[in-house]
Amino acid sequence: TATLVPGTTDVYDVYKSGTNFNRLLSHSTNVVEVLGANTTGITNMDYMFDSCTSLSTVPLFNTSNVTSMSYMFNSCTPLQSVPLFDTSDVIDMNNMFYSSGTQVETYELTGLNKWNTSMVSNMHNMFGNAGKVATSWSIGNLSNWDVSSVSLLCSMFKGVGGKNSTFDVGDISKWNTSNATRMDGMFSDTKFKEGYTLDLSKWNVDKVTNYTNFNYGTE
Image (tube, rainbow, N blue to C red; front, top):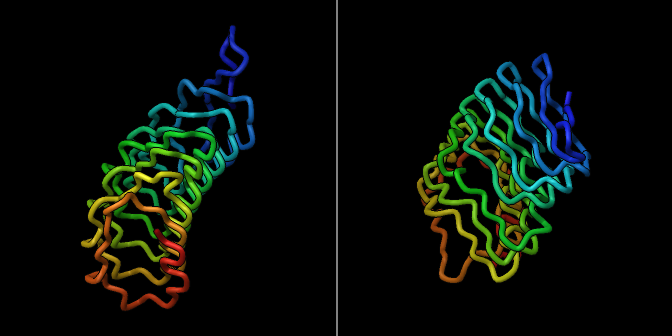
């Protein structure tokens, strides 16, 4: 359950038994702050903060057993930051930040560079359309991400970068993409910061079957 903190009208503390936080606060448009959550046994956080249109940040809570975070912050339009979650068991991150932060001028998700992504197989549309109007856009240097298990990279960065973009993801030329099967739309309509270049010539794409619109409209 999500319990309203006494003396407040929009601050919640989250406690729930079981393993599933799927859609726990989905479409809770009045939630502006979550103080904490007892998440020790939780494995599923799909859509947990989906469409929370007043929530700009969340606290660090135990995600050591979580295997799925798909759509976790989908359309969480004021989102500006996330903590250093333990993502070592997460398999699914598809649409995790899709259309998040679309109301903010500064979209900076710090700490993602330290996430353990070694188990993730699905990053489809992970950051699609995030920070759409931001004048400052950053998710940090992702060069050390282990994507060796990822099959779906399609639309991962589609439409990101915002206005007057400061967006880059570091040097990802050494990403191990040997298990990727789809990269369609991966950088479609992406707006990188001026002077930033990507050299992907060494990526292993032997298993990729779909490159459609890989970098269509990219600036």
